[in-house]
Image (cartoon, rainbow, N blue to C red; front, side, top):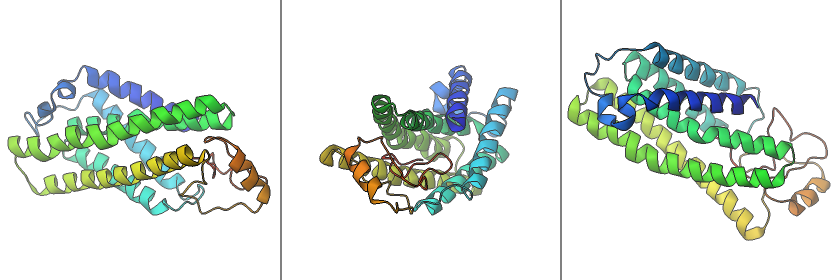
Length: 248
């Protein structure tokens, strides 16, 4: 609920803020008069809220249930915090707001699907997961490389030219794109298994295995968003082993 609330609120704030920003409609404006671009109060608070939230995710990862993608998530948090901090220091805040808003577009849908799963609203959970998968694929594999990377790699090169920190900034953005491909593969594979077999295997990221045969029987008879645990070991900090979506 906490993550859903934050992602939804910050996404709405980002859309409202960017709607009146010229670089939202023309990405070349991200580099116009760079680096002498004013830092407005709305942009400042947008950055501070996002940075604080990802630092909290960085720390909470060590107390959360440990999964196989722990290292991937750790790299993701490092890259995200590095990008937010680095773009702020170098006054690349215009393109930074585009990156943050784009990533927030699908995150709240995943958290909403989790809430529906825990509340046992099966059909709502399935629907939210389908919407999340579609939005994730479109934003991370479509809009991000053809809109964000296009302006950071090519438009910026044309307008301001490369410089030492330019290479680091784009390197971090490319690391994020690699992570997007990995997570898209995980989401697609789990969804494909659910479609073919009529059921979902355990979360591919989880190292926690059930000690009860009852869970295996129950899981096999449930639909994609259902999950069960006879000893409660799989319900830790809001995560469920039997989930069929991969948490970003």
